[in-house]
Image 1 (spheres, rainbow, N blue to C red):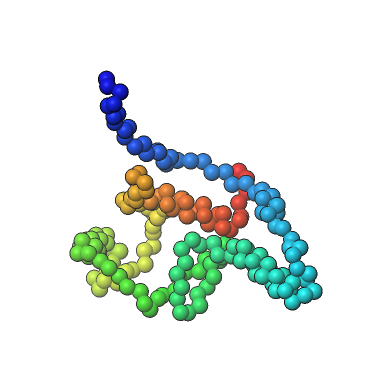
Image 2 (tube, rainbow, N blue to C red):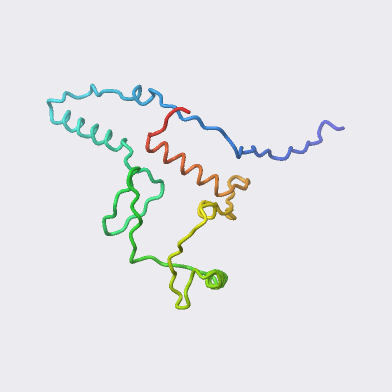
Length: 177
């Protein structure tokens, strides 16, 4: 071959993103090593008091008291979620809905199935069921939604697992296992 012949560039390589990984959460002293007391201003001066107040505000903001990654606000005050109390969500006046014709069709099909199994009366009012199957109550539906990141396809279960891990880290309530 001639020395003046240009060679072809190899195809670009795309890094393979791992779909499964192991995360070990351990409590370390990193947070305590990063706390550096201020020595710039004397606390007796006005500037020193302002610096102390700013530092206290910064420390307060570092304390994680919201354990949800997705938060919506409304005009009314709602109950704060807590690990010991489970409060149902309030009804919202400004809620909206979007449904395709297939969603409406599936709703009527489901209503017909429930009518035939006598869970719904003739007046379309749901009666209280006396028995239920626990396996059906805890059965998790298969997610059909997928999302793509850097050319790789992921299931929504990964996003949900990452949200749970984010909540655990935000709560700072985990132990080594």
